[in-house]
Image (tube, rainbow over all chains, first blue to last red; front, side, top):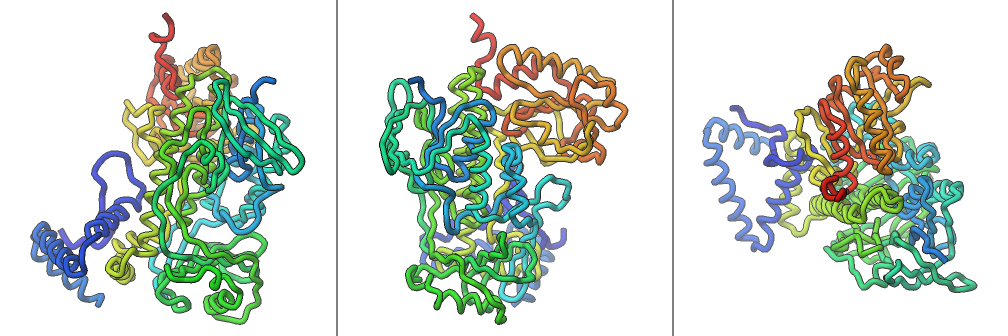
Length: 74
Length: 543
């Protein structure tokens, strides 16, 4: 599967969400995960999260594409 | 003296909506308002399609739309670029636009005019409620005017007296939640400008670096500008013209003349009461809950509160439903308040991040949004108020048959244009203010007998039921002459409701879908109506 850059967040089952809700929920989860952490701990969390998600994706072709998609915007 | 059935405290949008619904549908109601007329100054601006549909049912949507500014498109900018755009009416074909912008005092004036036309509505300005006591036989309300004081007794009280509700204080109740630290400046300016009637929101624009700005068009060529100021701004200094005018000048980027109509500096809170019902007293609107302004969820949720409560009170006062129905006001509108607070808190966290790290994260999303659509979808400059959905409510019958599409039991009816005997008619207009049963029919099914049977049977237990048939072709209309019959000439009803011949839909008096079936029996309909009115099943009541 190629790298997905279109909206791709989904809620698990239940009541059909309004279109913006899964993405908003993701943002809320991510900010909540950082709450109460020092800057140092927060930076580590970001890196560790990136590593965990990279392993979850697994496909090196997709990861290479993601890295270049991110890097090309800098 | 006998009790008044209902007293409404407060003549803002929520209180007037509730009072007009009750009086229009046969319930005498007294409205007490401390002010001498409509509110002044800058308050609610944006009224959603669902609100307009409710006001239409209450017969004062037309002046609001005529005076207001209709819009559907919202555009969000990051620095110099547009990064996100929404359209509240992507497929058109609705009676009302996604939003109408209108200064709140105009909306209140139109509501007051409608209220004054209703013989059962006793609207008393300059009447301050000093105390509220729960008595064994009702609610005692102590009122004072500039010249005298008196006491009223009512079966039910609707407390619609705003953020600083005295009724709430009188009962020792509180509205609690979160206070946000960022300050915002509101400037209403009068000017002639060729900008389109759209909602424009900027993150970090060149004319207001590092913060956000929101622009709305109101009627009379008045524009609402909302500048984020940060937590350290001085409310007294920032609203002075010498501070405000340069900010606006920078935004306009030219010498076009304008007048400052109103300025104020505000912070906001997201709070709610833990229960919106206290015995015979019901809290609606800002008295019950408060949200941030991003999303137009204040007045729009208050009006939906009133819409939800009024029909329940009507049925209980008429003896057609048990008291238990009134508890579902708190159940349903409590969930609505939770949703509104959740959405508005998320928007606030994106617009005014809680710390510098979260601001970095937010800014990276904005930066990615130029190239990647997934990031655009995360840009949250306010998620605008839509009709509340009550899928898990104890009054809603979940589907037992298969249906496709976005609409499900608990949703507000989606309006569609139909062809009636007298010309074009909107679905919501034929639903009215009572329960309504609508069947999609090809003229061959037995659905006509079913609808008439249900109407007679439920009429005998005190529940008024409107019945109507929607058909795909004009030929069917002639055969259903005893029923209101409409033609789905554009096929929109079939598509939006996933209708097949024989499908039947039950709508509540607030026009939310209560149940639907592919081929119901009269018992299915009767049972759904008992669920929808919180009535006990027949086995338990007939001993």
